[in-house]
Length: 315
Image 1 (cartoon, rainbow, N blue to C red):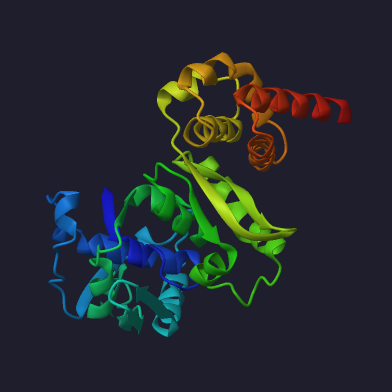
Image 2 (image 1 turned 30 degrees about the vertical axis):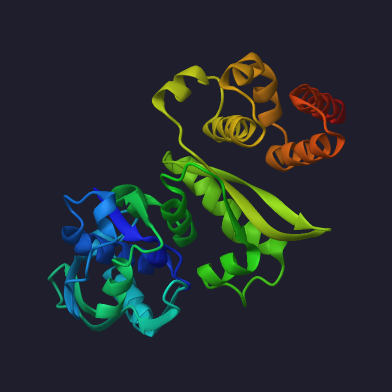
């Protein structure tokens, strides 16, 4: 089932556990009757029809790995009652804050949990002034970490790279106080989410570091959609390698003015280059040098080949 939610809700600042994230996803599913049958052009004219709404969620849809520990879902609901969601809409300069749910109720043997959802959350869910995100419900529920779910929602269907400041990413995930070092944040949050999406076989991503001097100030995300045709063409590569290949191809075409014919002519080089450690960061460094020296696309290809040779000598 395809879900539609506002971009504003997608970037809300809150730290969630996996079960809390799944409960939030089920809340979004509850609201889909409002957008069903509408075209994206109609989304921005939607008015929230909900007040404070009672929602019933089957507990089995929140649990993972065939677990039957209902108590974990009840604990997640209790945690959500204490979570403060924060939203800011720059166009109207409106700040929202609220708890996600309240009045949690579970009748033993019912197999479901009931709770109330604030009208404010639905207001934000249907506020499409800043755009919207679409994603697959089952894929979202299958992901093993809340960070993987958040990045999947943000990047699914995205065709161009997105750049996010490190501080904004930390705030969005609610980990500003947990990871003081950017390297730890990337290692513990971003990289595991990337690997989770690769293993889940849904649309994935790769990323590069944006620096000012020696400091990493932002991450540039490259959404990658792998088609059945891609899997056939690159059957000799792992899925992770294939995601890297696709990301490099898109970078060359969208940001370095290569044609798809030129990409095809350099297929072997691109495949070998994609296997290098930090290939995306390296390609950006090559492009920076090429731009500074006013060199053409041939320089970029030769520099990629040079990096492959250097890596081969290190083995």
